[in-house]
Length: 281
Image 1 (cartoon, rainbow, N blue to C red):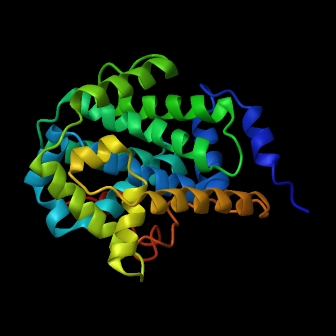
Image 2: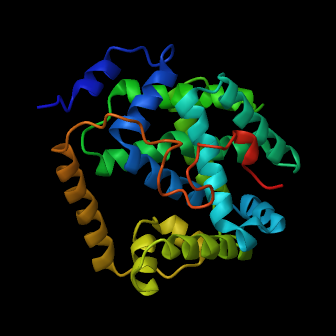
Image 3: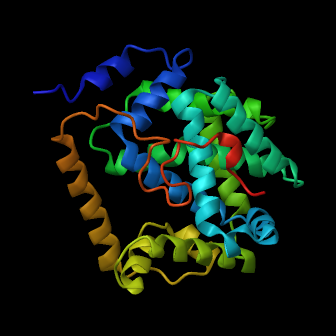
């Protein structure tokens, strides 16, 4: 039988500061690929609870006219950094695209820093609840060091120099910046509609399932109607049952990052594509 915990032992042997790129690739590409994708979907959703962020996104029109493309661009650009490394040729190319797109707008540094923090802590919080095994300390710290290095390459200033400090910044930012606005509602609705479009089920079912995964502060910031309590409980139970089943599967032998078959905008990516092909024109 393949050793289900071989990757965990390998990760535990690595240094989270020196080896953070390898740890991120093992953890997100081999150990928890489905969970990382889902948690980062909700991480981005969470950033739209901030009026200054949702207002900028509403002004670009990308969510209104090309929500699937914007989602795929973001997912693939981040996957390029993990799959190949942020200092690899493809990683540098992806970062140039990200910096070019952000450079078109006057974006508050704390807003950028907050979005970066969600990439660290939202997957960790998701996996604490729904992961098929507990995260190692190396995985937690590796994620922090990885995205801190990405933040340096995006010229994001003032990222705290400890894992706990960055977590505290995220918590304090959410307490002070979350709040309802009409643009929150618009961007949130576009995103909810996008999620619902992925599944061949009645929209009322998928909408309730998505809203069941949002916390009370997010529901209030979007002005959404909370999901029925039963749906919220069933969603959590279903995800924990999935984790138990995944625990007994053989280990993944190929990473699922840039080769995610659920990508809809760029069929067959990365074959025939470069990171510079991604992003709004």
